[in-house]
Length: 372
Image (cartoon, rainbow, N blue to C red; front, side, top):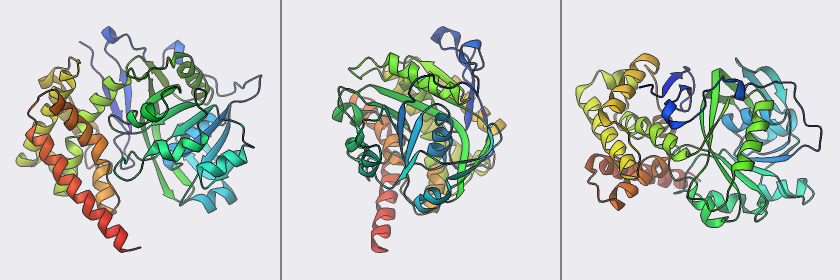
């Protein structure tokens, strides 16, 4: 049986840099690099360009805003990098796409300011690339000024599971496109973006949404393809989110709590045992939701893949802790834990990791407030 195979590029504290190469044929997903996904960098729209608002323009937001700008008018909401980007644009160095100074159509500090800069006209797409931190902020509240009910398509490129839930709850009549990114990129200094290797996006449907977003999903894929992005259409994004979570929910918390990188973890019997225990529980939780992952096969694949492609690697959760920044605990550990319990599963290892990392997060946020 063909399995999901990935290749990692050695940069950035995110496990989003594993590139999908093959999907199980029985799932019906197309392969990247097929004629259906071939693209031309020179294609442009013959009609008025659609408008895109990117909220959370760090490294990933900058890369995909840049590629979308080849066929759309892109406004970016920037925070810590606002001054640099507003004055000079983004300086981007990409192995795949080349070097360019990218200046968005508008650079703003807030979503409300973006609406004003767009002369009150509705945005066709609101692209969210913020870290998924529901324990810190509600993404729906942040993007609300730019969302026209029933019209604006909301696009999420975020880590974790359940990131779509607050969007569906607050904007039930809006089209929703959910994306999992496999890319190696980082913002080395404000406004300076480095991207190594290739990239790909799994662009999927969030099945619990009440709105049929198939047309909007394909339209957004078309925009991505015109920018040379590898984009793959999926019928069920949560399957991929679960599968990515098998690694993130096990390796990430153990690396964060022990301070070990992946090489050190794999060489430590107790740490590796903890990873396997958490991973098995997350896989069982996914299967309780209706999927059919082979537990032993998935664990074996994840370990072997890490040994082959992700040695001496620090997950983003570990890097966030080292930098004294909030970690994405709820979407990586909290959501699968809640879903497992709702199905009556006993997942003690997952629960322990969630509780320890949640407490660590709370301490981090208390310390940050005390420094204000």
